[in-house]
Image 1 (cartoon, rainbow, N blue to C red):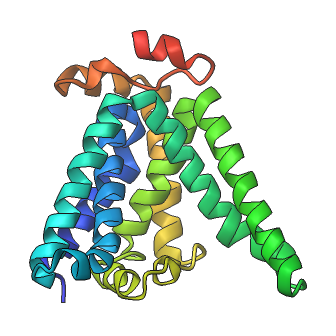
Image 2 (image 1 turned 90 degrees about the vertical axis):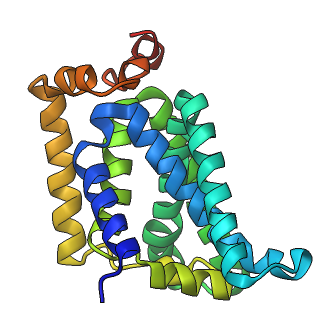
Length: 227
């Protein structure tokens, strides 16, 4: 059954996937809110014994606090946030997409080291791309994160399972699933089209605060910020 929370995540995912990078202030802030809320949600079970609060109240409070902190930090440090988002997405791809291909035939410590190496390499590559190719990084990152929520590859139920087990395993999903691929590809292409055909300028003009920072130049992140 579709709950209001589930529907809200789907709508947020679609917006993030299709117009996220076009208005970078909103995209980065929404991403910061989602990441912060997820972190608070996952941390709540570990705080239950310390704070002694009611489970539902604690989870809601932790998620709300995490969302607020994530949103504020993302808005306050937009350039750093893009680098961080790129690093997180790159690390995720390195650990769960690239790493297993190299570690599949390795056992024990060798397999672990290969996974760690792939994760660190993914973080480094993602962060570097976030620094020198801000727009492209945001297009790929927002399309990927948005597609995960819009296609219901990640749902409140999977977040519940991750919080209960204190592991990211329930959050893993099949990146070859048709629904995910469709939203990801269409969202990324849509965002690239917004930049190419000049619709970004119109969107930025309509949305308050969006002119503060819009990642429209991959070659010079600083000039994008001053624009």
